[in-house]
Every structure is written in structure tokens, then in C-alpha cells.
Length: 342
Image (cartoon, rainbow, N blue to C red; front, top):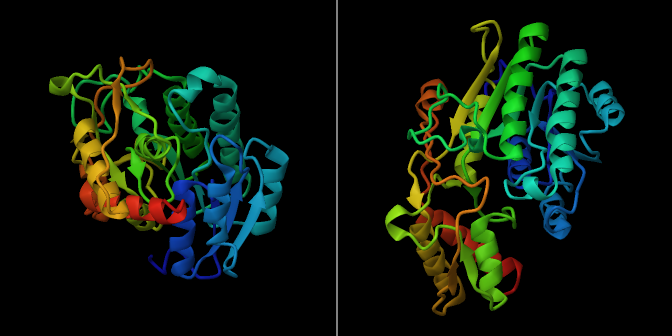
């Protein structure tokens, strides 16, 4: 972290601090000596106990303060900004999940649109040195050109979740243009690792195995035309964000706003990922683990491939993921077996 950008008296506001990426980032910033203001509403989209476990690793540190707030509560967010005056804001709070956006669209509009608007308004009224916010690889929709580049057209989202993330990019650009808010959007590509999100496939597969259930794979059993995903290990993601914080964008094309892909730049076949997970769980448990597999048609809103070009981010901060899935999944499997006592 460049000391000329932040002093140790500056604070960093991280929304979604009890979430997967938010908790890891909070821990990293505290290890670097920065005060972290954590915000999370601790909703029950997935196991709140896991969110609390993440928080428990943070709250004992004097550099961390936690506020149970929903970012869609504008008055509460304004109070936090007024009282804490953060130098940097990293907005990771969002309603996640592609398929859930079909079942419960209201949650996405409230959190991802109204909530993000509140963040922008607070950054307008209480100026910050840098706003970093979570976008998603989902904005690329059914884009068939790979790897995905930030210059690709992203006007055809295939889920409401993706549409809300595209709207975040447009809103951030506008606020940056109008109010000089240096803003960086990050298009995340399938982040995984210990203490990850239970709604992600690798976590759900593991849950089902230990429950004695089969796993559903939405690729029609078409191994020649399998799904590809740019799986990105959590530590690589955190390294990238850490390097970005002291590097706010300068004005270009009318605004100090930029969007980066943050992924592994090395997509894996879904079936390869699954077999690697089976091996990792076998190592962690000391017994042979083989999933019982049911093959289903691809679901509405899903895409066949995600593949990040990360050249742009590498040019700016030297971002280059280093964790192969064999290592990352082994760390996840070891954590899971210990955490859940399997």
C-alpha cells in the first residue's frame, strides 16, 4: 500500500464485510495497519452462521468496527459516512446469484440498485479518495468472443443480476463525471476458496456429497461442449484489490472511472474442476470421494463460458493470479472438513 495515498489515520469502509471477499479484504487491510469500518446486513440468503464466523475473525481486532446496516437504508449509510469519514470505500455488498435473481428480483433492485445509489450519494456528499465496487463477469451475458475484454459490448445481460451490475457501472461513471468521484469497477470471475459462499457450485457439491445426495451438473452431460469457468482463488483476488486501492483512475473520456476484469485468465472445464474437487476432498478425508452426478439442461441466465482477459489490470498494477485450482481446492477442502467436522 502506497503511504503517500493513505495514512494509517485514514479509514477504509468495506460493505459486505461479513461476506466472502469482504471478510478477506477486511483482514488484509487490518494486517496492513488500516482501520476498517465493516458494514453488512447479515441477511439469510445463505447460512448466517458462516457469516458470523467470518466476522468473529475480525471483531477482536481494535482496527475493526462493525455496523449491521443494509446499504439500502440511506439514512443509516449517511450517518456512517458522517461519523467515520472514510478515505476509501470498497462496496462489496450486493444480492448475489444468477438463478436467485429469477426467483426474487426485488432483492436485487433493493440491494444492487437502490443500495449502490446510496453509496454513490454518500461518496458525493462525503468525498472519498477512491471508490471500488463489485461488478461481475455476468455483464458479458452470452458473449461468445473469448477471452472477455473490458472493451466488449455488454448490452445484452441474460439475468437480472447481470443487468443490475451493468447498471452499477453506468451509475458509477455518471457520478464520477458529475461529482469527480474516482471510481473503479471490478468484474469478478467465479471466486472460490475457504469460507466461500455456500451458493457457489463447488461448495454446494461438497455439501451434497456429505449429505449423501447427487450433484446436478447443468451441461446436458455434453463433455465435448462442457461449460468453462474462470475460477479465481480468493487470495489472488485480494492481492489485486490491495494493489488497486492506492491507484484510483484519472479522468479519461469524461470521468475518473474505469472497469477491470479480475479473474484467473485460465478457464477450466467444469468437469475438470469437479474431478479436482473430488481429489481434494479425498485427500482431506483420507477416503475416496466420488460425486454421484445428475446431468441437467443448462439453466436460464447461465452462460457456457467465462474467460477473463486480465491484461488491462496487469498493465496497471501487475495483477497476475498464481494459484492453480489443485492448490485452491485443496485449501477449501481442508477448511471444509475441519470447519464442519467431516
